[in-house]
Image (cartoon, rainbow, N blue to C red; front, top):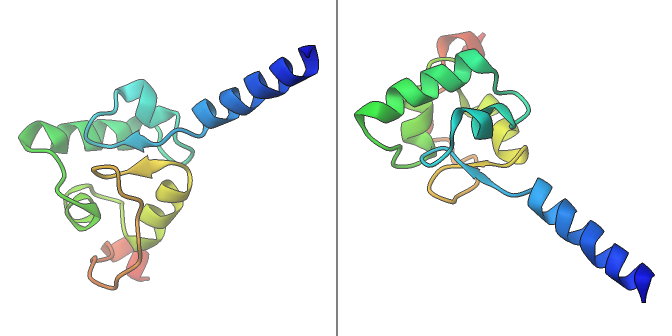
Length: 101
C-alpha cells in the first residue's frame, strides 16, 4: 500500500514539474524556470506584455527580441506556451536577424 502511495506521489510531482508555463500569465520566477530563459529574456517578455498580451507564437516572436522559430521551438519543448498552445513550426513566423545567419 505504501509503495502505491509513494508511486502516485512521484507521478504527481513529475506532472507538476512538467506543467506548462503560459507566457501571458507567468511571473518572473515562472519564466526563469524555463530552461533557456534568463533574467534578460524575462525582462524583455514582461516589458512587451505590458503593452498587450501575446496573441500567438508569431506575435511573441515578432515582439520579443532574440526569439525566432528555432528558439521558440526549444522554449516550447521546455514547457513555455502562448495562450496554452505549444509552438508549431508553420513557416509563418519570422526569424530574427541573428537566427538568419
